[in-house]
Length: 273
Image (cartoon, rainbow, N blue to C red; front, side, top):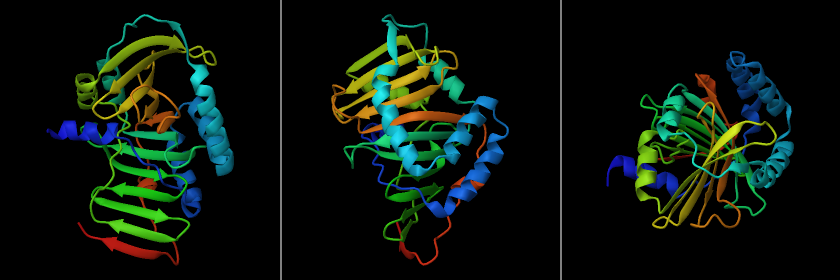
């Protein structure tokens, strides 16, 4: 098995989001991110100011509403294949080195656990070299070959001297090449978001070998990936295992986002490879 195929299998088998926000870092992260976002367009700034001012409980409630509405928001208006190729998406995503993802996981909680993810791409733009994941149980920070897991409830930090988690918000050539090769179902349709009027591309694919199915949405104008859902079955049934409900791309992200400070009084456990 090649490294590319192994990366594809890691992603397609799903990601367990058993994580939570770390309140001690929130103010510092907000200021760092807003400094970076000052370089973004006005609509991006409005979105982020809203997110940063919201309470985490409000975010979780809003996220559940978003997922419920998502099934009806993207109404298909044209059931023919659009003039779109995955190479266009790959080229578009190569222009960005950072991404922020808001999502929900249903694997640990039937009502859904919200999470947020910041990730920075490696030089080849085929996977993140650093990421920060905040969810309902722990904060996870991966930097080079170091992984930090902070369990908020237990106040325990586990430091692993190797990278034990992989995330792949960049849909690159290797990923889609392997996905297309192994997919038992691969359908591309176009539609329109009735709220924004923007045209969308929808890819649905299923994999018997991995007992997984994916629903991926792209913006027809920018070609960028906008939403993603994965089911632990091949027929898209029931609640998805997890959803990427909002993805915002950045040319750069501040280094502070990927720093980790051990909270005062926390128990530290170090694990060697």
